[in-house]
Length: 227
Image (cartoon, rainbow, N blue to C red):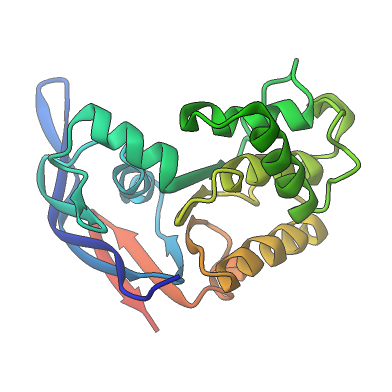
């Protein structure tokens, strides 16, 4: 992958209205994230971590400011443009896995390809490759209830990477896992970053953050870079 900025945030502010009162979640955030960065975002509950991740993922829009993903401004892009960027550029992994219980692992991974308009043979090949990449080549026909927590998170990661995104956004991806499984999932995620994927992780776990290349603290809507 080429080098350069993946994200450039300038003056990003997000304000919610609760019971008629303005509540700032982010206040004038400036941030640059480079291709291949591994970024851990920490901070207190209510400090703005999830809000920032939602803005980076195009799941919400800022009240003010600019969020450039490459050359596209997520703050001003049309819903169709944002949808295209999310389909092609961004992968998401969550604490709760968010797998569909009635589908097999392979079918869950395949849902990540629905917006791309690929042929069925190509979809099948990509699903098989993604499952192999996360060490589950022999679990494609298993449903979530037949998999351990760690295996379910691997399926969720396979679903995120099957479309070959440039950025993986992870919200507490190891929060429901024991220490051993956490370390396995981290090794998998960081291995993806070694291949050129930009990885942005919201985490409360200092052991996770300590392994990231960059650590950001988000408190009272303000980002501070930790060294």
